[in-house]
Image (cartoon, rainbow, N blue to C red; front, side, top):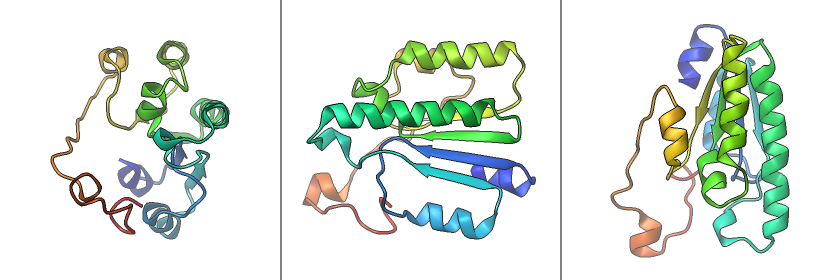
Length: 155
């Protein structure tokens, strides 16, 4: 959807809630493709193995504040909240707060599309969403073979 939006000449913002400061392949590709993209990696990395839950929660809340500004900015047609469902699942951010914010915007007829990604979306998010797609993990090299995150596969 990001590529489609850029292809039509619109602006896209991607806010990463979990991934840390390292540069991912998708970020490199998008930035080469268009100057209509804004990319913010505001997480601390793999927060399910956290050493500092308070810091992780602070970073998620900071990312949410940044995300809200992009969503309200009428020059952006698409805002992707990368791995926000993981942040919700880990208890770093409240589902109700997200839904209320998005409902209020919808009432104001904001034309921005918002995508929430990450496994294990809450029942409330699924019920609220207009479109839900599930990517189901069948097999993963980390789980089966203990292979750590690999360039071009996980980032």
